[in-house]
Image (cartoon, rainbow, N blue to C red; front, side):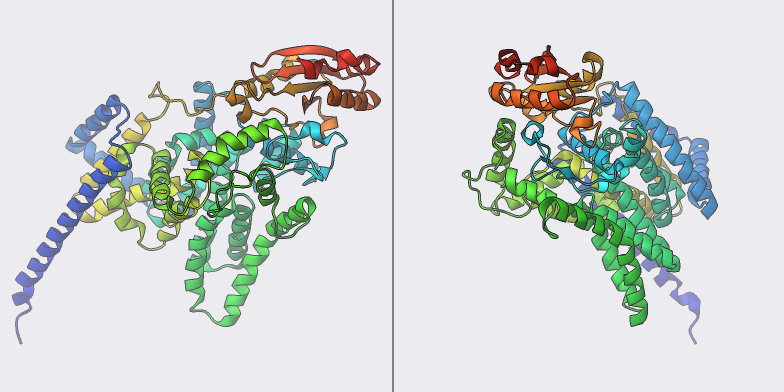
Length: 610
């Protein structure tokens, strides 16, 4: 028998060859990262001081005691107990929530709605807080017509109700509108820590939280009543429930998977596909090995969890559109934005909004038609590349982190991580088929990008098993670069980039008019285009417009305004009437409804004449 020691040189050669091959692959992926930064990142490093402090951090890590201390610190938080991870997640939620509010105050964000989308969701939340999804048609429906809200045959927002479900408690308890988004964002970050700790380790979980909190879009939307924070929270709940179900397959986790997927489906359906499809594929693969009875049982639990949310959407569909499988969102686009859809509808400029409201017509011409003209099958590859690049730039904490993305992909597919990472390519594919693309949509892939970055750290840890200081140095560089990119250190950065003077006027109205009041908003089609994107005719303080302390209504001209005055003279003659010009925000007092309606037709018509 031959001596086993004779094989030792061959084994050493294999290890040496494997190490050399790994070094070559790592170098090639590093070069690919440079190419990604040059093309997708457009060779940006944002601020010189960020490079300097990051370089300083790397130099400090060359000091052996410092490097050993960082390695020990990372090892100390790497493997928390289940109870320790839970307490850490709670601490992460609390600290991140405090920071998100503090940085908004530090940047002097205008903590009031600035986009029409926000007002739509707040209107829907107000309805839900009264136990309603819609109200009957108002007798003066034309005065309350505004973008993304139905006024005929019912009064209802067109948006999916999942976001309003999260906002409704604040509406019910008369709390600040930004509180529920803030709580949702804080809960997401805590849960995101648990998910990444499960997929990697505790140290990477903390780094993943920093990488998402370091995204400017996230900090802005964390206090904004829109659908992006709810869909992130629903997605993290879905992944966490799936991970726990896979570990122990308890009945409750199957129900939680269905509930999270159902909530996501009625929040942002396309985003829900990106999040739920990978989890569904992973569950199907696991169920394939189980008996038929077990498969049916799990499927029944998932369906039972999703059913309440789907039933809510079904009731909403029937109540607004009269059809079970036509959502209000689809109906609204078909009526007033006919070329705004998923897919590639034939461009036809003759298709016009059914509404004759001037601002809807101008909005369609300025926003939808140009996008629809470019949205063709021939342009699909170009649109995919452009939108994918924009999505990555808007959802990563710093452009230089793109250097790590190719290397990170080597770890993104390991174990169960692919179910989180797969949301990114699905998002890019599906949103290529939508007529419009807004940068805030891309917040959905911020967790997948963070996962890819920390995947690069793990890949380096495997490559330098005997030199833990190398990945520790990379972690320190990533953390310092991300922190240096925060608004507290970057005085040129402002997370809330929305400039909405008309919305600022909207927020000041309670201090500038004497309630109960009616404010008629005059729109001039020849006025500034910004007025089209800042429509203030939303009554977010009441489920029924007549119950609002300040009724926001359209100025429809002298003859129509007389009809409004006569209506409120019968019901609420004490209301004061104001006219607001949307072009410059000028506000003028016209008199009380009772006085204006008492035969003084000329004065009553001033609202339309000015």
